[in-house]
Length: 283
Image (cartoon, rainbow, N blue to C red; front, side, top):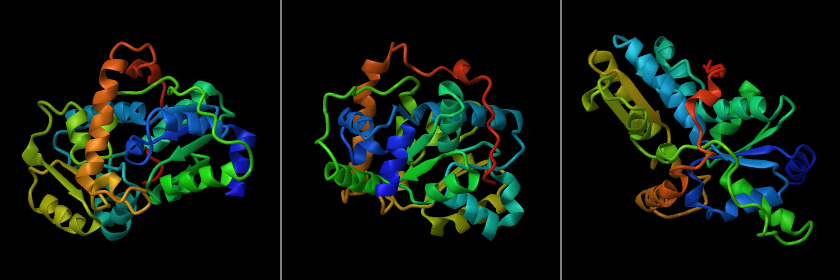
């Protein structure tokens, strides 16, 4: 924890907060805590998810004959590369929300900006390290441990710190950690029907999904997640509640913020990132 705390104190990174945070942390207190921990800014990954959805939409629309596999989950990406290398070319050539958001804020706030990714998934550490595009990645459990460690080092948490996200977010993609989230939020009307999509949430289901794709050319999109309970079911999440309770926390937060964010000038627009490189270097 000491080394991690020193990294944050010295670099004052932009914290990239995953949309699964309502499962373990309260809004807006989590923002105050991250800024108390010397993070210069705190942004939601929901904007990156919106940008990725646009890329997915265009890719699927322009290549209706292709079968594609969502490449947001690093465990799935590595599994396909190792277990089914013949299908590696079906992985979406678009980087994950973590990478896209890191690229965006580094350009937006200056090339010397450091990023700290906060998420419940251990595999994201591997993706961050292998791509070199995120400076530090920690799980929710590690964040909690960091908070407790920091309390032993100096004053108690200043809850008066600014408690609003910095610019760029999107409301619809707040459900990104849940099943069907990508398909539901990428505007797939006239592009994909339900029977052309396979959704899984466990690595053991991946083999069957691949077999179905191989035998049925009508299957066009595989949204495969490695964890039972989607991205809120990973063991490095703190909550021990069942997956439906966790999912409801995500939906409740989305609804709570819907009206507040409706006309906010901080809302992320696609055109803000027209210059962005979406290339997936993790494949």
